[in-house]
Amino acid sequence: MTSLIEHLSLLKQAKKFWKHNPVWMPEIEQDRALKGRGRCTIVTTMKNEGPFILEWIAYHRAIGFDDIIVYTNDCINGTDTMLQMLERKGIC
Figure 1 (spheres, rainbow, N blue to C red):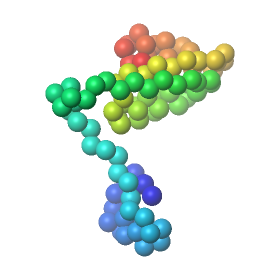
Figure 2: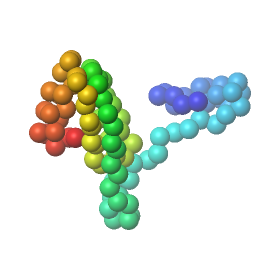
Figure 3: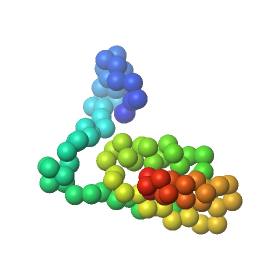
Figure 4: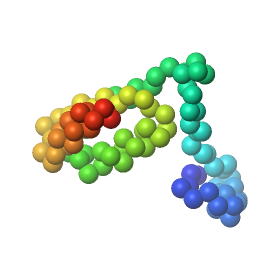
């Protein structure tokens, strides 16, 4: 079980009811290059995901991806436009 809120009572319930230890997001290393870790790239496809792109990119940046490559397929809701703007800003 994972939780956005790490509260002691929720952690106890997870262990009691599901007999499972919660999994936390890994700590983000600030100096990855100095610790020998190379760049991480994620490649995906999207179709009509315009409303969810920013959240998706923010999440994957937060868990450690450096580069994001998105292929689109006949989008009709502005997904392509949003991704092109993010590309111009160097975000993906």
